[in-house]
Image (cartoon, rainbow, N blue to C red; front, top):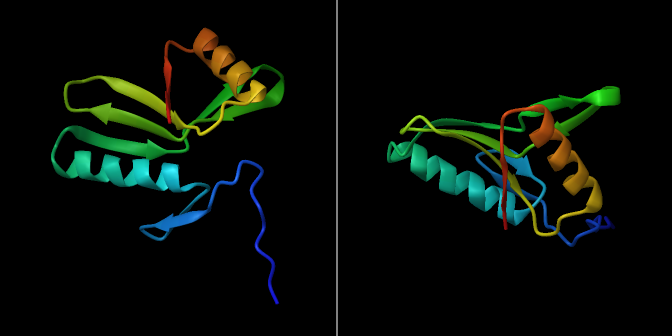
Length: 104
């Protein structure tokens, strides 16, 4: 008998396009971005862009999106914002000329 591992925030791991996502919300956003890319609203997007922080710490967002109008956005899909996430988000926004959008 196999036991299902419970995620600490009750997220359900989901597969889309043979990619494992840690939550249904993130997989859903991925599918939305694919549709936007197909309809030429975005040029392309990348998953899991990494940002280096002081002290050997890294922050990994969920998506970086390159829009057709030239804008670039960084998104993190969150059901719940932990204090660790809030701290890393603030650090990244201070060190890099970007703004991280939280998608619920």
